[in-house]
Image: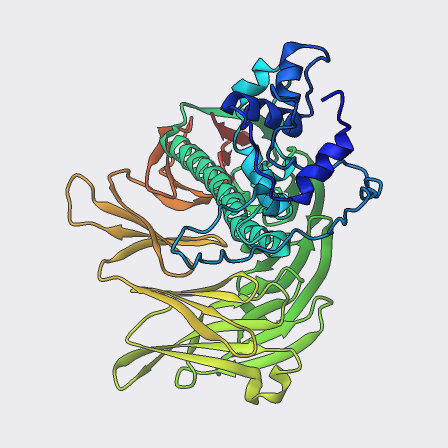
Length: 552
């Protein structure tokens, strides 16, 4: 090998002159030559192995497989051909072997005629990592054969090059919806868990409230007043309105007297709507309108007043009689007369119940008439806005009820009207075009009725000696909230917030909206009047004055 230059050796191998090798190499010598060509290793000069690999006994150069042309990372310099040799840029095309006329097998293909890429692939497959370790060199794989995380190098895929990259891109697009679906599913699961936790928390709170019972009724404040026996009280603002034949006083939620007004009435009565109140002399001619700041208006009529109602805006409707019939006069917040409605027993009937909407634009009246020995009730709704001005007698709605008595109507909130019949109730919604929202009927005898801005309740008579009453509560859509039989002997009943309070002079019984009993106990020394001013809060009057009570 020392006597022969490497270039001459390469040129001789590439020339492919077809000279037969008289001293064929052994398998071990071929493997070592291949290692030298593939891994770039060479034995130390002057050793016996070098001499055995480079020359035989006769000193001739042995025939070897064509060396693999290494591909350096940088562009290799152009190789000059040896003298008398022409280097081809492309590997020689394979030619089919020609058959021997004598029937002999075709000559074996010279390794030099192989495609360099095929020779490289064949050479690379003969060595193993163990052989590389024995030769002291690290085994190196071709970079283009390695896959990292599903990435194929150029030319290493099934189709090679750009087609393979397109396949990888298609696979990524197929995997991407799966990842998005997984993220979406995770979000759905998270929100489902949160929603379940909220629902469970609400259920536990509701269950705790439902099972919670009050243990005592305690006095939180007391106040001494003049002439307590002759005074009456109604819930008003945040406290109560105390009124008598000669004066009225507003006591707020902090138990302080905010104002006092004076007048002279023989039989004073009051109607309250939120923070507005009207005080009127039944069968008299004086009316006083006030709010939480004091008196706002005072009216004197030419006819005796039998009933008056007020709106939160301060408008007032009053029923009067002139001997020949009944009149309903409607006054503005400044005392001016807006309208007069004349009625008689035949058409539309005698006014039984009356209520004004919060904004003062609607007036509802229930009439009772009798025709051909048949009881008939009618609810008429009058509008005093621009729409009502175009209607005959300002009537925008009429509702007939055959064989039914309607003792009371009441605007609960906004334009929502409750019609209390002797066989149930009807809820009517709407201003200029009122419509029936819900209707509930009962075959039982109604003992008492009560209402709030959200619920309507009845106490019905029950065919039972141990529990002679039934507490029946509905929402404004007619859904039954509770139906509970009870035995408490009550005198008055009403809503206290979202609870129902029954009172019988010296004892108090409280039920939840779901029919669960919350409390039953003594109120103290027989008070003259009992009022529910809010959830858990009550006011009673006695011979000394008034007391504020609280459930605890």
